[in-house]
Length: 364
Image (cartoon, rainbow, N blue to C red; front, side, top):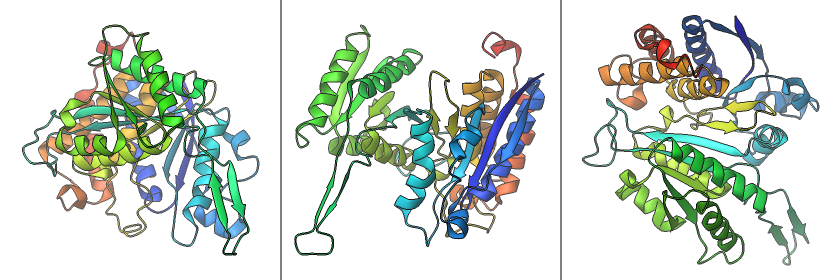
């Protein structure tokens, strides 16, 4: 029996509630698929920072380097500045393990009401592919004349040909399995060096994919189109900052950021990839059992697919869709009264009816 070694990092806030529920669903999927998990728990978090002064140990990356995947909940909590928690845990993992693709699905499912009038299930279905290792999220820069009237702050954006090309190729390869339509997010009318370069590389990579539909929008009007015309999109590729913004806006237009899944992927599998929901630690509802576990569970489905367990991944995704469509055991963000555990239990119970091993045997 195949056994996958996975690092479980609940992190902060509701991460401690949704990760165990996600693990429960993953275990059920594994039993159906004839494989298993070997979970190792890590307490890396803002709570750990408060006790030790570090989000994770100095050898943290070495501890998880040989894992098959990383299953993370959320990072961030009041009392620890956000830049400290982010740069102390998430970014070192993303960069240390060359997880240069941040992939986030945006799909309107039956049973969820979009805040956009007249949108029906299936009418919104696209991916945001975010460059995850460079761009605007750079540590290059600093301050000069701190605290004085002449104080100066500078931070550099870093765009490399390798970085742009590889994330754009990933977007095109993903679109090849879908509608062969790739949209690029830019701001080359206002950002005069990095964004024109991004546009140049998008045009160059596009020539490798004849027959594909391509377009690009400045980020300001693109956010408007996400709201007014979300059905236009199939795969959207963006720099680190723009992708971060778009992949929060996308789930918002399909009804709840609580269901939003995410993956930090090293496509070559030289290092473990990390799977985490988009919703963050939500300290306002932490400990109340109100958190929606779907984002965590859906992220787990993305983990299963990355590991090659396609039948199990499809079963989890279909079970999520089934439970939502029936409108049972929904958490408050989805208009229901169920708690975190009850929704996860409903998805677990729905799994067997959706597992079709033969159909995906060649893949898994």
